[in-house]
Image 1 (tube, rainbow, N blue to C red):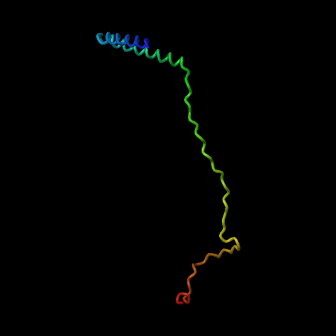
Image 2 (cartoon, helix red, strand yellow):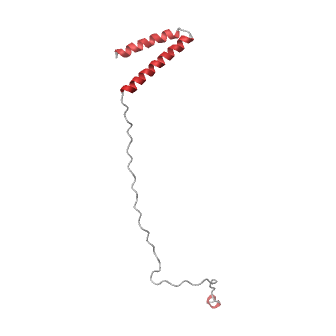
Image 3 (cartoon, rainbow, N blue to C red):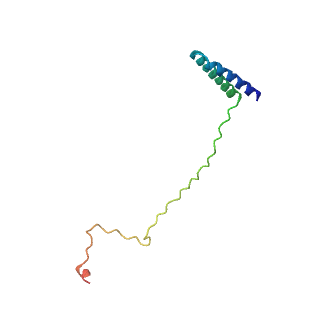
Length: 98
């Protein structure tokens, strides 16, 4: 942990000097700190192997097997011959007054 304490003390010194400086020095200080941070990140990326992200396995959904369609005829006993097209049948007068 002493390395962190040393780094923190150094950054505090940089901050105090930076606050008392002119704008150009302040901007140069910011660029230096940003460059240092970038170098640290690049070093860390090189030393740590990239672990592949674990992808959770999704179970495949079952696919239902198709069943053959069965044709159901209501009257399979005796097929009737189709009637030719005629006008609708009208009830006879006798049937109406019964």
